[in-house]
Every structure is written in C-alpha cells, then in structure tokens.
Length: 336
Image 1: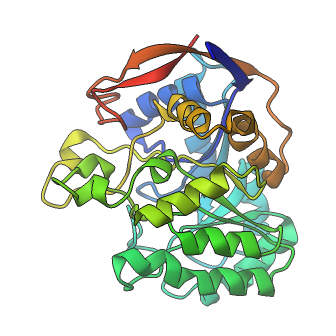
Image 2: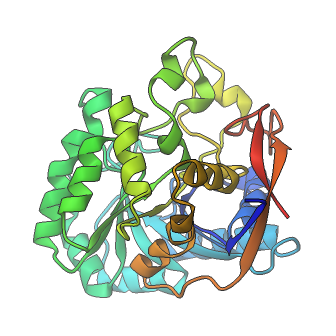
C-alpha cells in the first residue's frame, strides 16, 4: 500500500493543558484530528460553565488560522455533586461528558473522589440529561499494577445502577478491563490509547528508566497488551480511539518525581496505520479512529478526509517543548 485516505480522525481523550503551552498543543492536535474531547484536569480544574466557555475559546483561537474546521468538545471534572441546572449550563458551553478522577491517581487529581458512590446523585442526573460518564478507572491505594483491575467492581455496579447511562472506561490497559467491557451492556465502551497498544512495563523500566513512557494507568504485562490489541483490532464498536495524549515539558518528565503522561498526538495516526496494517486489520482502522466513538457519543460521523502516504517521517526529539512518542526515530507514514 502506497497511501491511505481516511476520515479526519476523532480523539475522544486528549489533554491540551493551559496557558501559553495550550496554543502549541492545540495547534498540533488540530493538524492530526478533526474533533477532540478535551480533559478537565487543568489548574484550576474545569468545573463551571464560565471556565468551559473560556477554555473552548482559547483552544479555538489557537487553531483558527491553521485548522478552522477543528471542533472541540469538553468534559467537566466531577469533584462535587451538581444540580440539574448546573449541568444544563455546562451542556450549553460544550460539555458532553463528565470526567471522574479517583483521588490522587494521576496528574492534578489531588481533588479527586475518594468514594464514587458519593456522586450517585449527580450520576443519576447525568443519566437523565444524556451526558456520558468518562472514568479514569483506577482504585486508589491498590498496588499500582492492580489499580485498574480493582476498579472494575465500580464499573459493573455503575452499569447496573444506571442502565441508561453511557459510560466510557478510558485508556484500558489490562486483560481484565478488556474482558469487563466486552461482557457489560452496550452502554459501556472503552477508549484505547496508542501507547497501550504498543508498550508494556518493560518499555518503562525493563532495561533502563524511560520517563517519557511513564503514564497512568501503567502499561502492564505482554498478555495485557495483547488483550488490548485484540479488542482494538476486533472491529467491536465498544472500542475506539482516545489517545490520552498528555504532554509535559522535558524537565517535568526527567526529574526525581517525573510526571505521568505520553505525548502521542503528533504521531498517533501514523503509528496506528502501521499497527493496523501489520495486524492485517487495516480495513478496521476507519471505524476505530473516526466511527465508533462518534456513534457512541451520538455525534455525526466525520465527512472530511485526510490522506497519509507511505513515506518515512523522522520524529523530532521534541515537539512543542515536550518529548513525543517515538522521538528521534522514523515512522512509516506521513500526511500528504
């Protein structure tokens, strides 16, 4: 194959940060994706209609010149119970999902929730108002490699207690999570990142410490990566792309308390083309990157197209002040 044309991809989980850095991260994302779902764990977090309105305007201002087609959907952070009126106002400012972070498990989650059942009044309203509930599915205080597995009991209970609520278990990283999503009702889906398709724990600490591969949830054993790959390449509509592209500056990654996150946005789609091609599943790529996610979120499918050609692309050592996935190496596809 010399080239491939696909719908302009959707990314249903991306971090664009804030301040001056936002302009570069948003611009890079807008050249790779047609639509994104931006995460709310900024400082301060996105929790009010006014904050969402300002954040969306900043993103669109940063991308208007280079990608006027770029669409931004927003999440708000669940750190309290919301009234129905508050949720309605958040919807008016572009929120289509609420994001649950457990206490202390990832970047800027010090205000995270210690007991998800405390939020059941709001979750009931999310179901009523047809929001999506996005879950960072890790159990605080569990052993680091077991945190996702230990969280699954909450996922099962949520699906049972709120049968009409659409739930996304984000960035699945374990065989147990893949199996749980497969076995739960059609209201439960999962996003899959590029890095969880290709990395295991060996790629973080196997030979030497690789801080730019360090993320939450941690990549795990080869059997877990194989399970994630199996559902990604299965054509099952429950599984779709959410990169969890999470840039941090080089200095914040290469230090004694390195930040968690992989900056994959600049290279996500070329890597996915190669991975799907090598798996003999290239015909399933379009739905994974620009179909199933839109269907689950109730959005129209993307009509704009982008073409990639089979031409080696050298990845810079840094992009936007952060070290991207596959930095300093060559990948096989480039946008035309």
